[in-house]
Image (tube, rainbow, N blue to C red):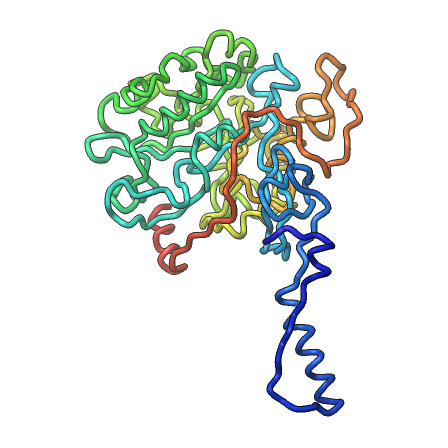
Length: 429
């Protein structure tokens, strides 16, 4: 879409030669109507009142560079919003506003199947047949404020790989790449951002002895490891984020395999957190059931709460709709189901897609309510009493910048036959 100016528009013309003589009046009217519609196709103005980084959230844009810091130029056809406008693309890091609280008082953005990236090249030589859940690299996800990664790890090719597979086995057509590559991205981020904490939640199909221990060590992540022996096991508060940073305990790792806690010192996920049902049950309005492996959501014997919010079959074009009003409603439902406890982790697909503020605005509201009793974390004031909120500008502005900027390249789409996708998903369940 080209830039538009009033001067340029005034010189645009649409000339159509017709091989006929002088038309009758009815025919002339019909031809005039035809010319009007024909010309309108080519002369649709693309004027915007802003450009060069001056456009705020929800304002029209024609290129990524039009939008302000923390925004990108997108749209949401599933809600009838086909023209591009500035959409929020980065999270506010709550500890940059209110620090010093226990880790379990904060809410963080998690990417479901963070490694399952659209357009990721095949490293096995086989055409990949699986679902995709994200659109940018893990490095970019972290730069945009993601602080939790869901990773599916398997034994494959005498190594540990990330696969989006089924029935506990990785195939060359479901494989994405060695886990070491992604874990090295996490290590690079932690080394470059010494105040940040990252959580990794592993769907664990690794059976090789000490396989996980080895790959995390090879990635250089053992120096950031939060010891399982120090994790609260009876629902107590976690240490403060400040103390975790001071001790360099900035990587939390959880596994779905209960045996790994004793054999490798990796925390068994459901001993430390409650979790709602993933997939379609997790997006059903007015319902927030616990996952079968998890304790009841209102249990007080685990101090972390993982909220899954993604459908069974991920569809890129629908994500912006899912991340609008239904997301906020589901957070409220799960909050009540958990006995008025706010989720600590919000896991989504295609995290950047929305009709405006999306998951980022929802997280701001979650953190605002929990950390300071305000409608958004942007209204929190360090050192002020709970409920003392500062005046903030309209939500129709660029979000506060508290992250190292990532990027988003646009509206990529990839699809497979729906019947084939559904069959694969059934096998994966």
